[in-house]
Amino acid sequence: SAGSGGSLLDTLLRRSDDSYVKAVDGVSFELMENETIGVVGESGCGKSTMGKSILRLIEPTSGDVRFKGESVTDLSGRQMRKKRTEMQFIFQDPTSALNPKMKIKHLLNEPLENFYDFDKAELAQRTDDLLEQIDLPKTVKDRYPHELSGGQKQRVVIGRAIASNPDLIVADEPVTGLDVSVQSNIITMLEEIQEEFELSLLFIAHDLSVVRYISDRVMVLYLGHITELGDSEAVFTNPQHPYTRELKRAIPRSHPDDDPAETEITEGEPPSPLDPPSGCPFHTRCPAYIGDICEEEYPDPVELQDGRLVSCHHFEEGDPPIEGEYEQYA
Ligand code: SF4
Ligand code: MG
Image 1: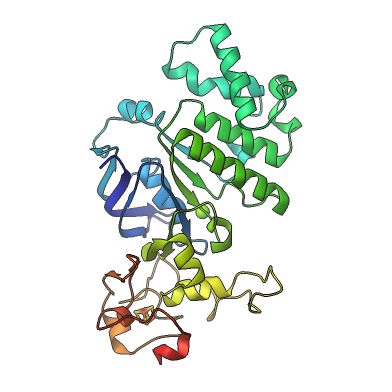
Image 2 (image 1 turned 90 degrees about the horizontal axis):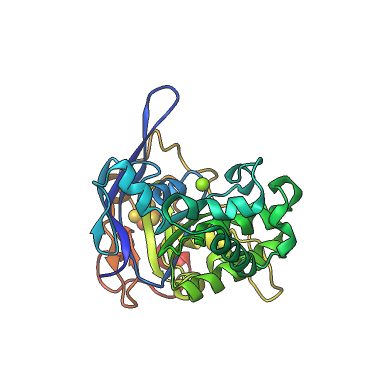
């Protein structure tokens, strides 16, 4: 297909003490052309590492990354840099992503100068078009990043990412740390850009509510494993994996009609990826724990009737629970 994705991706990260952490463990999925997948999970669950592995900003240890049907795993450094004009990464912190000594117009032109042959007038026109696309006034052209707000800087980062007309953008928590009102403006802008450019977008966020509306599908990661992957609205309104249910319960209450939600996930922090639990990685915190099987065997993903994938032993036999609360598991 024309989509992008990885199969059986593993990524080991080297730590300062020379030990290794398996940050991404056997992740396989396909992002379709013109599709947005939201990736959620607590910090340290492998979201960023997975996103970076797809663009080989971190080299996966094993597995294959395919982009528009072709493997990019074996491309040389130079070939990969060229390929990255078509597959772009948006970093979380716009301040460190922008060279403080460059004017905005040069920051927006830089991605084009490296691989394309535009003359001055064409570049100037391109800058104006990009500024319009990212809703910034032309007057920012001659400013420096420190003269812009956090939200404006993130718009410039997004402008740089779309400058080369990519087919894929991986956005790593692009709105984390911004004011809530700015967050929704930037998400709306990204959604418009995604539609206009017919991009495949992998939108990484820390919580479900951020990706709910922009995503076609949602992928939930826990300690480097996909726990649930399915239609965004279905996963949000009716989460199936016990971890997804906990994530939803932890979303701060935003609407008076919502159930009162707690802001903490049961059983505290995720375990250290240095010493991941045996069997199902969620078993040390799972409110729906069944028994020994959870500690002994990794649950293979099961496809539910609505097409979503869930990795949990509850779903391996007979009709999986679709409605209901945790009590149903007991
Ligand atoms: Fe919980 Fe067991 Fe399912 Fe893991 S496999 S999520 S521990 S019920
Ligand atoms: Mg991260």
